Length: 548
Image (tube, rainbow, N blue to C red; front, side, top):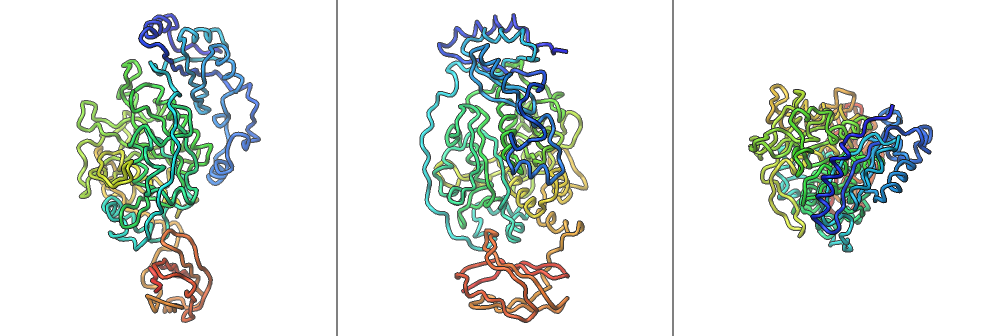
C-alpha cells in the first residue's frame, strides 16, 4: 500500500510562498522518502558495485550479511523527482531510502504528490541565499613534523594530561597508534587542517582517505569552522614534544555535515549521508562531536521523549552503523547547565558509545550532558577529559578548549588503537570492554556513566580471552643502550623466542627468531629510540631499546 505523504501540502504551499518573498534567490530543502527499492539496478549478490573492498572486508570479518539497506536508492526514483520538480540533488540515504533536494520554487514540490513511489515529503531547511555557491580556495601543505622521543610527558607535551588520564600512552608504547584503522570524523568544518604542521605526516603518508562537504556539495572541508579542526587534533596531531593526538597513525575521512550559521533539520540528513559514506568507504570507527535537540523551526525540534535511542534520524543512523560493523562514538553534548540538561542525539543512540566530560582530576564537568536516554539506558557510557583540553587551532598553534566535543575524540582515538590490537572484536564487544575497565563501572551514574576508562587495563584484560599478557620479567636485554647488537636471556621457558623491532610509530623494522643468549644484530638502525617486542610461550614483553 502506498504510504501517506507526511506533510499538509496546502499548508506547505502557503508557508513557503510567504518565505519566498524574504529573499531573491532562496533554496528550499525537502526530504523525499521512497516506498521501496524494487526497481533497483543493483543486486545483493553483487555488493562490490556499491560497497568498497574495505567495507566488504569489514562485513565479512564480523559475519554481517549484505541486506536491502545496503542497496543504493533507486536511481530512477531520484531522476524522476529531480526531473519533475526541477530540483538539485543535495544528498541521498540508502539506509532511510530517501534523498534531499533543493528547490528555488517551493511550489514545485507539489508535483510529487501523485507519484506512487513517494511515501513522504518534509521540508528540512530554508536558505535565503541558496547553497553550493561558496568557492573553495586551494589547499597547501605545511612543514615536516618533529622528531619522536619516548612515550612520556615530554613526548606528548601539552596533550599529556588528556591521554595519561586514560593510560592511553600505554597502547602507544605497545606499538598501537591507530595504524591501519580508518576513522571518519563528522563535524562542522576543518579550518587550517591543510596548512597546519600538526597534520604533515597525515598528508605525507596519504592517510587522509576522503573528504566531503555535505553543505556545499564539494570535497573542500578546510574552512567554515575551527570546531572540527580542534576535534581532529585530539586524535590526528603529531608534533612530538609539542602536541600528539590519541591516534596519530590512523587514517581519516573528514566530513562536514553541520552548518554553523543555522540549525535546521536538514543537518540530520547530512549526518546520515556522511555516516553512510563512511560505511561505504570502509571506516572502522565514526566519531562525532555534533548533537541535536532544538532547531530554528520549533516544529522540527525534538522532545526528550524522542531521545529514546532509536527514534531520531541521527540515533537510527548510529545504530545501523554499528550493525554494519562500525564503532560509533558520539558526544553527550554540553547542556548540563541549561534548562534541557539531557544528552543530545545521536548521543542517545542505543548502540553508540556516548562520551561525557571530566577534568584532569576526573571531576565531572557541570556542562556535560546528563543521562539516561529517554528509554532509561545509561548515558553517557564513559568519560574523557573535556575541561581545558589542549588542541591545535586553525593557525597551527596549541590552544585550550573545553567541552564534550574534545573528550569525545580523545576517547575515540584511543578506542581506535585498542581496536587495532583486537581486530576480530566487533563494536559492541569493544564498547563493553572499555566500560568494564572504567573507574565507576561498579557504581555507574547518569553524570559520568561508567566513568573514565583505563586503556592499559583494557589491553591487559584481553589476556583472559586468549591474548598473551604482557610481562616485565620474562627477558633481560643487554646492553641497552646498544650499538651493534643486543643479547636476550631468559630463565623462564628458555629456547626459541620471536623478536620484533619497531619504530615509535609502530612500523616494523626488523623481526626474526633467536635462542636465549644469542645476539640480535641492530647495527643497521640509526641512533634513536625503538620498541623491542619479545615473545615465547610464557607471554611477551615490550621494552624501549635505545640505539646510539
